[in-house]
Length: 177
Image (tube, rainbow, N blue to C red):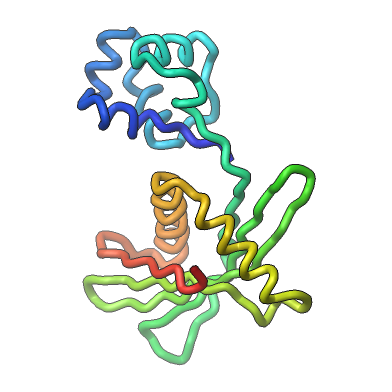
């Protein structure tokens, strides 16, 4: 997964997207999409302009992390009205190998807060559960904070889409870490 660090670089320099847009001529829409990691691509000219303006290299602006997260839409209702479960997977791409880890999201809701426990689903692992758990933990330990924050946002957005809830405070707990 490719991530853009534009929001971090701008925050470090106390620069707003509007100023960057005015100074470089790059549209605010493009910069907002890049800073929020919702962009589908970037032109070399745009990349060059941003790097020159911020005095950084493309390596500082873009970061590659061999991680894909898929949140499936399988919602499993529990007997309690305030609790749901969602199936998902975390796929780690490392060189020519791919590791897929089944996880589930245990969601507890009250009127103002949603607590999401991200749990490693060891029941779906038939071989080497301890080895795979340790492998997953080692990959998560390498993640930059900004990527983990984006990952949490993706999980929350997927659960909001499924459950139809929003405007609540979310707490994510990575129990397997």
